[in-house]
Length: 218
Image (cartoon, rainbow, N blue to C red):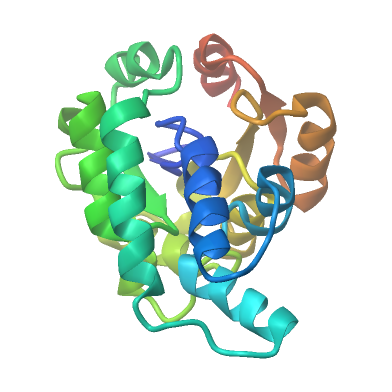
């Protein structure tokens, strides 16, 4: 039976992926690299910033400045303060949960904390946050979800994960968790739902209002 629910943050709790892609496009342009938001979304959603930077450096054949992460954090914080919104319907879902959910994210912990504070969702999680900084490898490796389950004192097979990216679904599936895919913040939800199922999601949903019935079914 399901004993613990773990949410990804970006694209599941907060609609941050468009802001992150906007920041990446602007940041890379500052350093002479042209990339569209659509390409950034396709290539980098769900990855850690370090993994994204490594891919870009491999493609262009040179190192980027060591200050790149700090530049991204500052730029994204400004965008968060101006534009960040919670995913529609997620507050009602969280308020209706009987247990104490957690978060497992490929974003830095401080960014997750800021996102929760700006949207007023922090009290639903009360610090139950696991990020890639706590483990050896970020998603799509299973480490983050294994660590989140360990912290909750629950076997991975008894955890249910809500994820929006192929990277995240892959990580949760590899950890042995049950996974449901969310497509509500993806620009091509129907197509993306098929990719999430192929990665290991047991079901997919597009509207947060559909999650409580899915949970009852599980």
